[in-house]
Image (cartoon, rainbow, N blue to C red; front, side, top):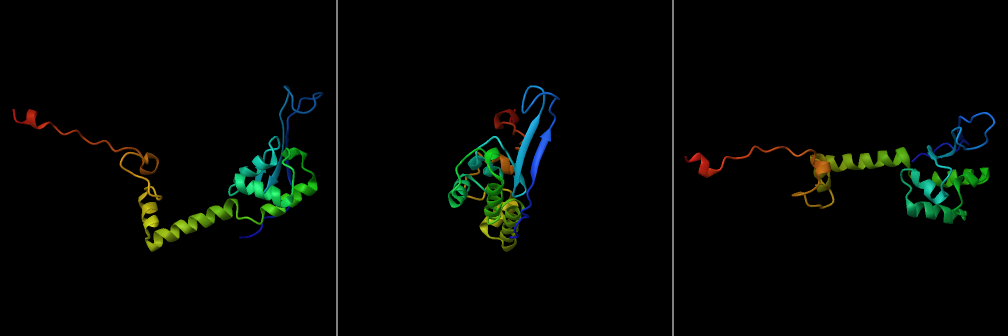
Length: 157
């Protein structure tokens, strides 16, 4: 995978009323940090903010904090140096577009070689062994209506 750009960027949306400071009743003020091409929230702890990036879950975000020996503080309290080192650490992993592309190519390959999982993907059915008699409506789509048969006793008369 290709490393993402390590440019320092911050997002500031401000619509404060004159004379009022910060976040208040009068206006809107959002500041966010951009890591891995995703704006992560400022008001949450770093462990949970990192999970907004596709490809980073609970365990990986904890591992990143351990590797960098960061405290799990609120994202807006991070210094510039900490943000830069966090960006460098995140680029070591396959995230966002690269990960989505990798998964899409893997599924296409399975379809092409016609393995069991590929066939299930192609048919739009569950891949991991779930039963299909009663459930999996999400994958199979809307239920097709079946016309009711006339009962045998009424047709004999």
